Image 1 (cartoon, rainbow, N blue to C red):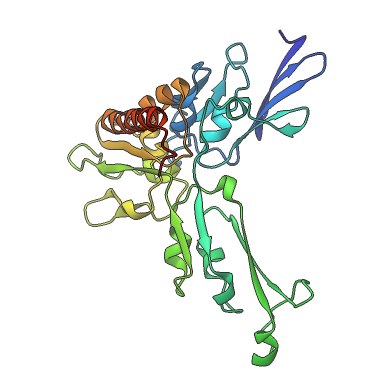
Image 2: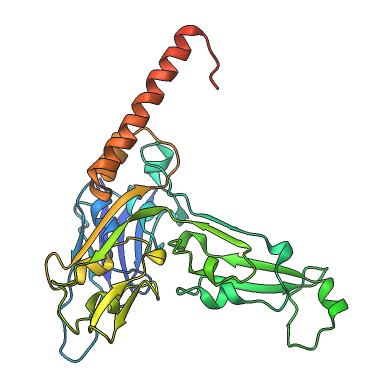
Length: 310
């Protein structure tokens, strides 16, 4: 048991601490990054994380739901850190990023598959950087010696040919919306979503003129308002299925959202199975468990027959 527990809640962050003899556990939630979505409350095995819907102020935009974490229930396992699409939560032990649930092979990592061929990137191009709705991409031009070159438009074609492009992406905070991929006119970026699903706004239930879901969506371009029928519509191409929109929707059943697949590293864990059951649809849960069962049977057969496996 910890010698001391501390909970600090400010306008910018929420911090939980366990202070032990030789270890100091910290969980820090960056409120500026948090989208108030459904993911970490659903995944938390201790049900320590709760969403607090913020009251709507007349004449103002809707506000994202607030996350609160019960210090008495939290055991700093790091699952919330792992599953947050936006990298808003960080769990550390003695100042080092440490996730016990991964070390004990109790939970997988989400696969953020982002590929870019910088060798073919034009020196003058910053399209992916400008397209990113969360400002997670930085494009730099490097000289042969590795120093950053300021591209002010005065470089000759010969000088440009000797330069290289470096693209830094904050992958741990990237929800893989794919907007950068579509923003790249050269077709040099490839992004795979790690959360798949389906989202629909039920027009007959959606209140005319309401934009609450649009107000809180962190991915610009996923939702848009139509002046024709005065309702919000969905561009599902960029949706990351985090559910921040569904949390604030004022009408039950007006917004339908289902997560059908989670892309993750290989794992066999009851903890993950329980989390998947809450995060994804029952059909997806069944598919994954059947796939695991099939692999387990095959491995058992291979072991008995002395095969090394394919």
